[in-house]
Structure formats: C-alpha cells, structure tokens
Image (cartoon, rainbow, N blue to C red; front, side, top):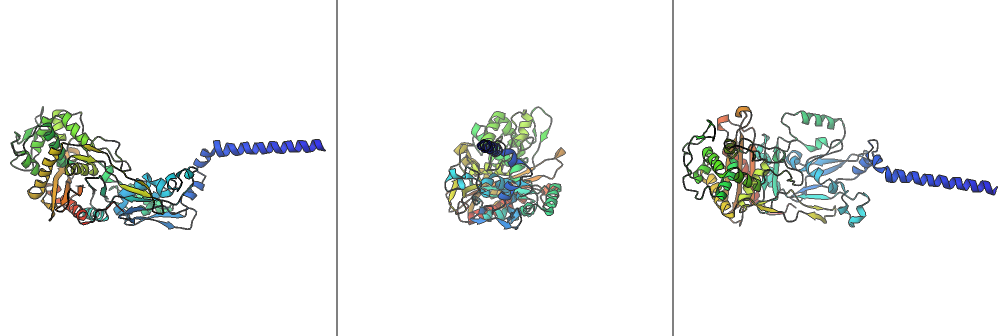
Length: 490
C-alpha cells in the first residue's frame, strides 16, 4: 500500500510540475502571441472599460467619453469636432487613433506609467485613470481661423513667436471625429464616405500638406540676400530688368505689378516684384539660399508637434534658372502653412526660430502635472539686423502695399501676400497666401504670427490674391489673439 501511495504522490508531483511548466510557458514565453491574437478581446475591453482622458483648450475639454453600456463600454465624443479635428484627430474603436489622440494615447488611455503616483508601480501594464492633455491653443484664435475659412479648402496656422506655442491650427473642409468613435455599421459607412470624398476632409492641410508658397517665400529670399550682403540698403536700386530672362534660357519672367524695373528692395517687397526677387536669389546663390531656407526650418523631416509634420522643401540641386523660380516660391519649393507661420514668427522674434509645439503639459485625472513642454530649442534664421529690416518691409506691405486688408487699429502688423501657381501648365486655381505677425501697441513684443492659405478662393482667376482672400482671415486670427488674455493654454 505504501508503495502505491508513493507512486501516486510522485505522479501528482509530476503533474504539478508539468502544470507549472505549462503555465510558465504560456504566461512568460507565449504571452505576446496571446496578447496579439485577434481573438483576444480582453485588452480591447480593458482599453474601453474606463473613460478616456480629455484634450483641453483654454482649460476646457473639447473631448469626452460616452458610456454605451456595451462590452466596449466608452466611446469618444467631441465638442466642436470639425473645428478641432486637425488637433485632436480621432480615437476610434474600429480604426485606431490619429494626431493628439495617437501621440498622447498613453496618457489619455491611462497606460502611461507616469500617471501612477509611484511611477514604477505602473510597470506591470496596469491601467490608471486617463490623464488630460493641455494644449497651447487659444479658443478665440481657433474659432476665428475656422470661421474665416468658412468651409473653403485651405488651412491656418498661428504661433506665438517668442515661445513656439501653436495658438491655432485649422484645416478645411473638415469632419466630425465622433462619427468614427464606435464600432457599428454607421462608423464603417462614415469611414468609407470620408475616404471617398474628393475634398479629403481628413487631410490635415495645416501640417500634412505642402503647397508652393509663392510670393510669401520672398521673406526667405530677402533674408538670404540681406545676410549675404547682396543687398545693403533697402532704398538703393536693385539693378533688376523687367522682364527678367531666366539664366541660360529664353524664358522671360514678368510681374503682376508695373514699375518693377530696378526698384529698391523696399518697393519690390511692398508690391511683390517677381523679377527683383528671382534675380536676388540667383545673385545670392543656391548655397546661400539653401542655408537660409534650412535655418527657417525647410528640409527638416523630423519636426513633430508632437505628431509628425510634412517636410517643407527647398531644392538645392537646381540650375540658375530653377533657382530663380525657387526664390519666388515656385518650381520645387513647397511649404506647409505651419512652416510659413514659422517664417513670419522668425521675423517677429528677432531672427530666432522657436520649435512649434501643441502640448503645454499633461496631467493626471486629479490635475497634478505629469510633464510640461519645457524650454524649446532655438536657431538663428537670420541676423537680428536683418530681422529688423524685414519687419520694416512687412509693416510697409500692410500700411501701403498689397496687404492693407490685414491692418488692425491699435496694433503694428507686418505681412506678405502671395499667389502661388500650380497644376499642369499652371492651370490650377492659384493658391492665395498671407503670412503675418502682430504686436499690440502696449505689447513689448509681437504676440502672434499667422500663415493662411486658401485653395479655392471665391474670385475670378485674375482677381485671386493673398491680400484679398487670405489677409482678412489672418487679421481676424491676430485680432483674436491680441484681444484675448495671455495664458499657457489652461
């Protein structure tokens, strides 16, 4: 009998060891395969089993969570969804996340270990209450930009020059992210409809689409020419023919304005003379032009705000004729509206470019700060003396040039208009551009820099202009910032 008991005990022990070995195999070595298995819904159920943290503008949430009572319990909701979609993106049970919802998913979903009072205690993958993301946006500026576009194709980006805070980021036409939040048939239909739409409402034109910047790029060309000493006096003749034959070709470049022959840089900038700036670009040379463009932020493929931004480009592999066209924002020169807002901000900030950012800080559900934006790196895009001269030129444009529609009583405003040709044989409707900055009379420094692009301006082709179509939108955004109290987004 004792022998049988001993054998049974040995067999039970063997079974126990086998059980422990199998449990170890499953829980340690094969756990990732089970976690990633499409049939495993525990992770998904856990993810949507609690309210998601919120994205805040001026201290108020523009997102929320709706309790459906189903297995995937909480769905995302959005306040003024189309207006904030280029910032928030969507959080969909079916299609994942984009923009801030994606870049800050760990905080919003409660999986970021830093949300735990004791950070190391979250290392086991536990889920804390979702934290909040405090943005740098100003509600009034965002509303002014969105209402200014009024559904027309285009985008607006506004920056605080001294810090890099993004104050407004709008893309139109837009969409309501709430339509993609759940996992029902209506979500599938909305997804299909949005992706079929020829107007591409889910495209973030402010940061993910590049345009030929047209004459707004003349700010960069002027900076390069002044820094290189090609121009030393704003009021000296520039020795520029009208028309200008592109080097090595028989192609003549002309102007929309009359009287551009040999005009000083001040007048050429004020009336946007193509011939003057094309020749200045050639005289500065591709090395000088590319160096200045890079300093402003062109050709930077790594910019994040925190989600990625499309690379704005200035081609350094060009001949002299192509360089002439590139120097007036045509040929291969491309820029996002955010990049052109950075150009205007650099002028306003004494030649320094601050890296733009959209998140001021993240917090726990209790309101305790988890992380802050911190000090942002700077780079010198041009000499401070050059920035002072460019501020003069941009103020002249608004006072008596092509940008008078951006003038604001009680403020100093600088701007530059642009009308960019595009399409096969320049057959497309020209893009209307305006870049600007503004300083209230009681302010010590400029408070806002703005870039506006309108793709489908409501005018006859020959009447489309940055001053007529884009400048009024920029003025509304600048007024909103100058009138609103200063803050850090919450």
